[in-house]
Length: 372
Image (cartoon, rainbow, N blue to C red; front, top):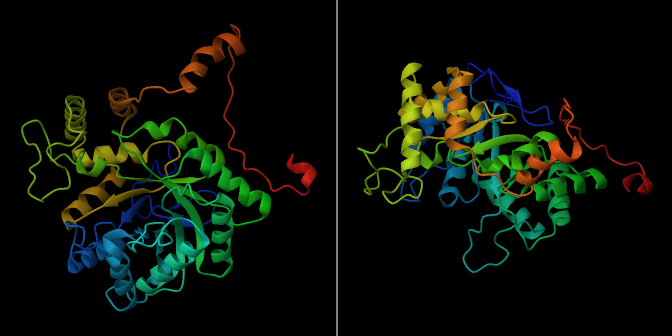
């Protein structure tokens, strides 16, 4: 059961991780705002999508400094500063990311160092015409920057009032845990959430990232729940994508395999039984995963937005979810496959043990002795 499971409307808000921040169970992704990447929505359509999402009760918007070369953030800034959303800035939760390098030839233009982070945040604040960011994501794992530098820098931004909450996007599980403990031990601001790719076609996050998030109390905001449109319902064996710019899915996509078409067939059958669409069923499956808080959707048209938002009202029976699980279960990896065999035989030695998994949050130590 997910944090959002049971939500029948977009305004059935949930708290994000171990925080008091209330967000909608569906987050509006703004990566499609702007045409600079060759596809997406123009300013007028982006504004209309924003208005419809807010009218329905949505309050969580996700962008990044590099989305459509900065235009995504600028569209949000204009919308809430002088456009249709004027006066509503404080009623929404705006998340954005730093890390993407927008300055060709500048080695300090991106990444997670203090210099690049502070510079990128200042640019984001100017583009979005706001004096604070509700949730700042560290976009990518920067192997060249020590995690303590990143965490102290994030803490400084929070204490300066420029950022309210922090989180990690597209990072290994062990880095997220290391970051959390750096913050706990040093008294810095603790991250509250992770953003990861998660869909019926990307379930490898179930090996480590999802269990880690549940144990550490991180909220989870999956991106690409429809695998970039592959699971939207538009594509079948008889209707494969055309490379004409109408979709981001290409005819040679590695995801359009026979196994995927079997999954799409199953999604279509389940959708028909519930008077829903293929996309809604695929979205609801993600929303119902244990640990998921707010699922990120991306829409280029109003029709796509309305279809995706309707997933909030869909109820996916356990037998349907189990059918989809069976079609997409990821292959086990070490050490999980090894342990699943040896725990019953070696640790339990023929006995039956019924226990529960804890989700304890580490308390900050009071002294050096308590740390070790």
